[in-house]
Image 1 (cartoon, helix red, strand yellow):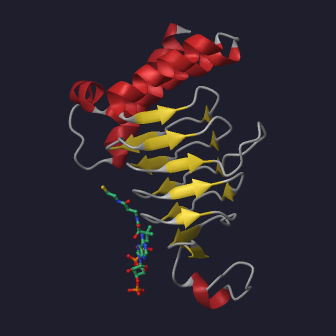
Image 2 (image 1 turned 135 degrees about the vertical axis):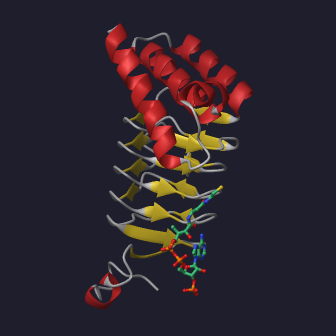
Image 3 (image 1 turned 90 degrees about the vertical axis):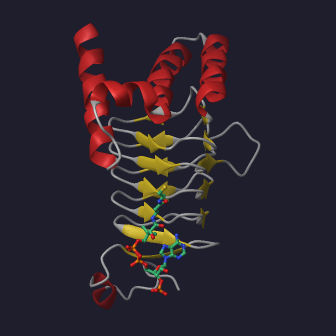
Length: 190
Ligand SMILES: CC(C)(COP(=O)(O)OP(=O)(O)OC[C@H]1O[C@@H](n2cnc3c(N)ncnc32)[C@H](O)[C@@H]1OP(=O)(O)O)[C@@H](O)C(=O)NCCC(=O)NCCS
């Protein structure tokens, strides 16, 4: 188990280097990156949450918020190689599900729109990037390989390999040359 934890930490550090051109040595990154501190603390609080120590899990999550400005509910499910650049002002709700290789910038909200205790937060596919200040609201799905632009407000599903920008967000294929082929109005909203 200790070996697995060590491997995951090494993977997180390598991931930070891959995603941030400003990242330098692993030791320095482990000390200064609040995004890394937040995901490491979340793994502990999620572990506690799943084993019924929910009060303790919430306390740890709120302490982490105090130190990093990143609030991740302990119930949220997060995959591997998750990276938050800059941190601060991030909220990830209880029923959010995040795939592998996802990256968030500061100010992102993965929030709900209803106050019922149901699945009310987004599901984020693998290798999605969500730009600074974007709000992704409701039990919607952001398809694998997509990007959400800075400050977008997304309340509807986004297909895989797409870009969602604006308020309310409109969606287009990620690669511009695909626009000519993809004329399905369900896929390409204007
Ligand atoms: C959405 C995004 C992924 C699009 O990248 P892209 O495909 O390379 O898009 P382009 O830069 O070619 O821009 C295409 C068009 O979308 C517009 N656009 C780009 N990002 C936008 C955004 N977030 N909101 C509104 N419009 C946006 C551009 O102005 C351009 O408009 P034009 O065709 O009228 O000139 C990117 O712009 C973005 O927002 N990334 C997040 C980056 C971030 O949060 N950085 C924080 C670092 S601290």
